[in-house]
Image 1 (spheres, rainbow over the protein chains, first blue to last red):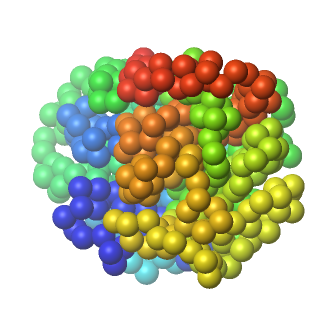
Image 2: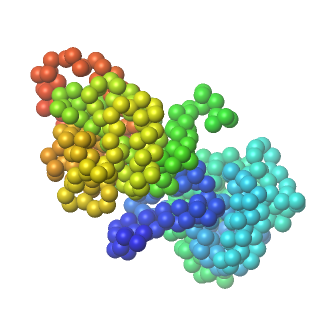
Image 3: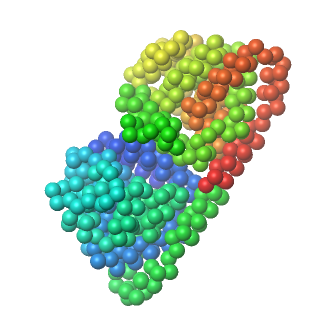
Length: 248
Length: 248
């Protein structure tokens, strides 16, 4: 990054790319994660690398859901930790009562522990790992991603997932949980299955979510519930599709 | 890949991803290359992971140009070697008089040598490295990618580049060379600057190019020149844009 000036039109995107490579070298992300990030970059490019009004609406709704939740948990994987570690901490701090749980598609105990330690190191106070001695299981899905920490997602009513695969998102919704997903592909199963899909780049979306959480923790509960009731995820996804379609 | 059956609708794409990861682990591709491949995957997804008629037209024109060329060279980088090593060899063999030259955006002598040795190992007879004791330089661009091997690209009238950055493509065109580019992004500078842009996935496009080369080596030169003269790259790029736009 030494030779890319902050005035470069794609500086933010290039800085995010460096974050992923740093995360990969630190053992947080995988090679498959680097590829997945590249796919996200292409979609974000088509979105003009900006937070659109449909994403803002989803983020506002997500904020209301998280404030109203009994026990919300942020499900963190290698890519979200690498791409947006500090921004994840911002959200946890802004909420005040939200835990993080490390859940990996390509699980290894070492990588899970490294991400746990990384989040703790940058300021998260409650971090769980899905795979632990006290794990419960989501039905219908395979691999280690089916596990839920007994103190974390197993107890959660609302789960915020980022860059998540469709199978796990579906299993979480079927288990009765409310799922908020951050996903740059409005056509993905994750975006369609989640109750709220934030079609935006994670490190742009999270600071905005943190801001709304700070503003809305004291709002009347009824107002927040009305906002949740009037939210239409299908319409948000259609708007995202239109932007991607039109901007190419 | 052991758990992905060949009947999977995205088998070919997933196999290509494995090739990139293998190439990265073998020291041919870089982390930045994995990210770039991910961006290409997203664009190929929008293209329906198939070779469209606009790509076929570009490949036919490229074939004519390569047959008519005095000395064509295939510029190979870490991603193209990883994603399509055997297909590169198919094209070189089908042409019969085309050399390969290793040119890297993130140059290291070791990686250049590894790609050289890899291509030789799978059957390429003439492989040069851009950075060598007998290099010449393209004006106007920085970094090691400006070098041209005196026996390779420095002598070439037609250069086939794949997954190439815009600066080098532009410098090659300004140097008076004809550039054929394989690039999944019809909006990229590379696609716009090249005389022929093949908007297609490299490992799908190259076998088709090899087939046309075999068929056309014996065609009357005049017929090939007419095809080249009637080719309109801007129209090809507009068609590619329309497909990407419509398929989201």
